[in-house]
Amino acid sequence: MSGELEARGYVVRGRVQGVGFRWFTQRAGIRLGLAGHVWNLRDGGVEVHARGTAEALQAFEAALRQGSADSRVDTLIRVPADPRTPDSGFLVEAW
Image (cartoon, rainbow, N blue to C red; front, side, top):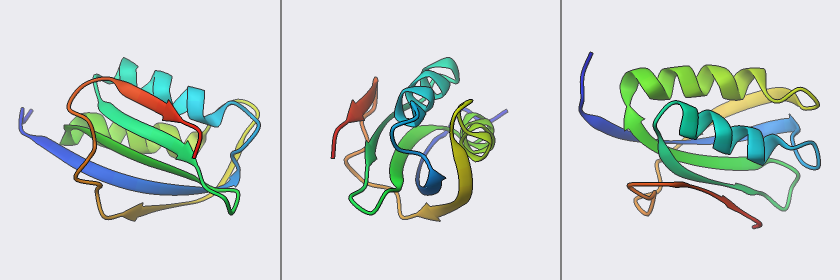
């Protein structure tokens, strides 16, 4: 298991606003030891950026694909990682 940290970005689309998806994302990130931030997009999607080990990020991506109990994830795409992704904590932002 590598200890080297990576940063990854994701855009999630489906029924992911108004269903607790950002809070689910925050809890999953914290549980996996990741730092990051998540926010709603104006088009109804959610964007997530996280930093951690490759193994933790792989498990995080799997959790994002599954989604929260009330959400429905239609697509998840990787986007370039935001260089401002925090090194600690996992923030939930409004926009």
